[in-house]
Each structure stands twice: as C-alpha cells, then as structure tokens.
Length: 271
Length: 335
Image 1 (cartoon, each protein chain N blue to C red):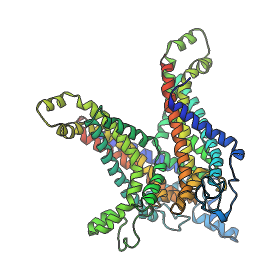
Image 2: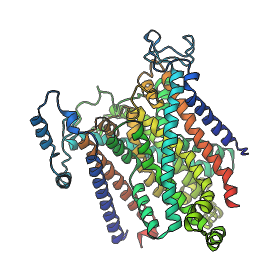
Image 3: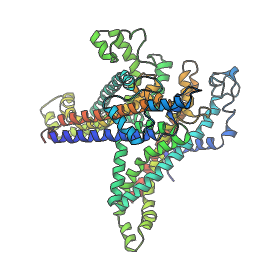
Image 4: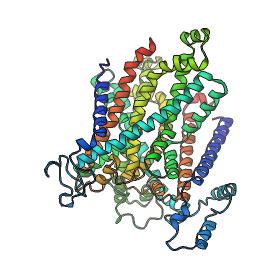
C-alpha cells in the first residue's frame, strides 16, 4: 500500500470529485440551472440552504460546483486517455522497432514541440469550433507528445534489458514481447504521466470555458463560473472564490498524486 | 558567433515560419462552417454572397488561394478582419506594443526575482532559508498562471485594492500619444505620472506571467551556482580573502548565468504564450486578448495574422537568446 501522503490526499480528493460527478443529482441541494432573481448574489450562508451563496441569477453556487465537476472530470479522463493512447502506441513503436519508424515519430514529436501549445490550441479551437468534443480533441492532439517522448525513451531502455533478450531467445514474437513483456514495465511511467496530464487537462478546460470556447454556457463549468465571478468580483467575491479554489485543489491533487506515484513506483522500476 | 552557425539558425527559423504558415493556412481552410455565412445580413441574395466570396478570394481553388495569400502575407497584407472590418496588420500593430511592453516587463520581473531567490538560497544553503525558498518555488511551479492571475484579482484588486485589475492605463491620461509604446513614449515625453499609471496597470498581469518563469530561473540558477561554488577558482577567491557576497555576485554569478539564460529563452516563449489568457483575465488590450476574440468570432484573417505574429515573436526570441548565449560563452564565440 502506498503510504505516501501525497497519494492518499491527492487520490482522496479526486475520489471525492468523482463521487460528486457521478452522484450530482443526489448530492446537489438545488437544480444548478434554477434561477431565482429574488435571491441573486446572496452571500454564503445567508439564504437557507444556499451554503456557498448564489450567483447573479440566483443560482446555487454549490450545486453548480458539483455539477461542473462532471465536465471537468470528463475532459480530464477522456482527453488524457486519448493523448495517452496515441502517445503510448507511437512511443512503443518508435522505441521498440527503431529504424524508420523511430525516425518518423521523433521528427513528428520535434515538429509538435516546436509549435507553441498556445498557438496550436488557438488554431485547433478556431478550426474545430467550440464545444466539449473540440476541447477533448484539442488537448489530446496537443499533448500526446508528452507520452510519446517518455514512453519511447523508456521502451528503448527496457528493450535492451535481459528479460527482453530472453523473450527473443525463447522465440516470442515481436508483438508479444512488446505488449506482454515491455508494456507492463513501462506502465508505471505511463500512470504517472496520466495523472499529471489530467491536471493539465482540467486547467485547459477551465481556461477554454472561461473564455467561452468550451461547452455551451448553459452547462455549469468551473471556468464559466470563474468568468462570471470575475465580472462581478466587486459585488460578489464568492462566485469567483469557490470555483477557483476547487480548480486549484483539483490541479494540485492530480499533481501531488502524480509526484507521489512517481516516487512510489520508482524503486519498483529499478528493481 | 561563427557565420555558418548564424546562417543555419536563420535558415531553420525561416523553415519553421514557413511551416507555421502552411499549417495555419491548411487548418483554417478546412474549417467546417462558412465564414461568409456569418457575415451576411439576413435577406442577402445569392449574388451578394457570391460577391462577398469573390471579395475575400474564397471562390478560388485551394492552391491558388494559398499562392495569393502567401504573396499578400509577404507584402504585409493579411487581409481585412471579418469582425472588426479593418486591415489586419493595422489592428495587430496597434495592439502589439502593449503585449511587447507587458512581456518585457514580466521578463524583467522574472529575471530579477529568480536571480534574487537563487542568490538568497545559495548564500544561505543548508539552512531554513533554502528550504523555505524551495517550498515556495515548487508552489510557484505547480500553480498555473490562470489561477495566479485570478488570485491576484481577488487579493490585490478586491481584498486590498492596491492595483487596477483591468485595462492598460487611465483613459484620462493616455491622450495625445503618437505610438502605442506607452512606457517608451512616456519616458521620451517625460510624463512620469502617466508611466506610473501604466506600470500600475501592468504589475498584476506581469506578475502573473512572471511567477512560473521566476521559479524555473531560480531553480536552475541555484543548481548551477551550487556547482560553481565548489570550483577551484571560488576556493581560490576565498583564500585570497574576497568577501562572500563579492565571490557570489562577481565570480559565481557570471559563470552560472549561461545555462540559466539559455533556459530563460525557451521559457520566455511560454511566457509570451501566457499573454493570451493573462491579458484576457486583466482585460489588457494586447494581441493575446485579441486572439481570444478572433477565435470566438472565428475571424479567420485575423487568426492567421495573429498566429504568424506569435510565430515570428517566438522565433525572434529564440534567435536573440541564441546570439546572447554565444556572446556570453567564449567557447562558442571563438568556435
């Protein structure tokens, strides 16, 4: 069992978010879209039941926070998994097969890295249009190199070890060696990267919904709530503070989980 | 710096920029959705639409469109913005100075702050000071600029209202200016009150962008300083009786600066990328904020112009840093 505090706290916070996202309708005290202009911008604890106050349309901040975790986690998981899948497959192929395959993938990574992520995301979102799918695709398309680079290097290293040679000597096929022998040994590194990538994806989604390029404004998102809070920050600080704090905690949780995993899994890699 | 190296760098820069342009063009042309459809007024006839299409050259085949577009870009003609109905180059040139001043100010803050914490933690290595700085540094690195920016809005804009949280200057002060370089023109005209006002508007967005960079500079510079401090010539300087602060500032810092500088170049491009969201948060009228509007309005000519502008900025920064590194590093200079 990992006794690292970072894994427990980071993982624990993400588990809480996951529960909030899965059981939003039962956990949220109010309908996140229900407007009540009579109690607009009510501070926290003032109106009965509205624990974290209401926004400028009288919608319950806590309920919106809970529902918004659905978008955040959907993007975090979907985008990271797609990026991970593309990057891992290309990284494995480049690292194990070498030759022209390695050359093409490495060149591709170089080109991608030369393109600043901000430019690429501006272009991609402009091309794909706004919406949840575009956000997921954009993140995956931009960030697969993070996986490909590391997996490639790790695969190269693993392929040189005795066990891989032994498997070749035993007459195992290249595909079998790659997926049954090498992949399990690269997996810890992938897990660490995946956790870090989810933190990045949550931030990117928040930024895109902040500027209004993510899901439609009807759906509650942390970024959307932050944008509204920024507008009325002088009248109602709570509309900005709570989603911002949640976003901060989420990013920190994924970061800490990743760092913790790295340290926890490292000795197993060395052994 | 040897001529061949400069030449090869320049060639690779041009190739990169060409690549950027091709990608921009291809990506923007495959946009689903018709940009013309967004501009026409309700009740426009087929002929009106065709005329508009021809006006923007959208009726030609793709390769012809690229040829036309490429020729125009080389002449500095990026076309007319669809949402702002103005020449794209004019719009960008009007907004660019604001971003350049902000980015340079942020860079200066980051270098000053990064160097300061590196020197501090080297001077007090293995004490609580170093541990404190390390801890603070890792927080600065873990928190993205988006969250920093909004935290500053809350803390220094609302809780303790020290600084303005939107705009670039007080509208009553920025009258009768010929350029958009507010700081430089303010200096030339000796309008100190105006400069102070502009700086007050810039401090929070600049701080937002500089923190992650400061953390990186601080960490790398500290590591190299630590390595340098055990070198023979430092020991010699100590034996000669030079004061610790003089050794650190005069002997060690000069030799530790090169790796940190190379890294600063790479990171500075990230900082420029960070202007997009930071300018948005602080309603700062630069090209980053403009880029967001362009994407929201799907203003293709403006997006193209902006991406090429950003690409050129990134390449210019990289080349400047290359030249500076070569100049500071004698081994490269005489190679």
